[in-house]
Length: 115
Picture 1 (cartoon, rainbow, N blue to C red):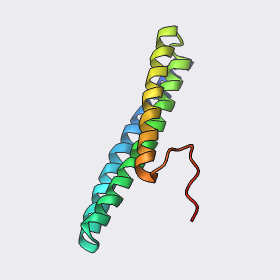
Picture 2: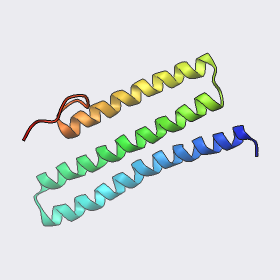
Picture 3: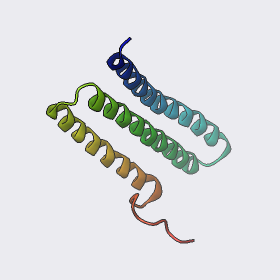
Picture 4: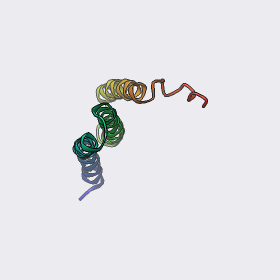
């Protein structure tokens, strides 16, 4: 196995890991949601479910971006692939920021509210 094949394998594993994190996070969120529905109000259960899903989406997106960066930089560093990577990273960053806003009620660069 040469270096390019190893790097491709690493980026494929990172892609699979990102998908697995999102999938398992949603499944875990469903389990917690069902448990919370039994023990708490539906409003609290729903909010916890949303937070769990958003957290797993953010983490999965970060790992998917890392896999894309590795693949683009190490395997096919052409101008077209770098431009596509840039667009993907911009879209995923916007999604991460939007999801963070959804959870915290503030943009990632804003200071947390003082208690």
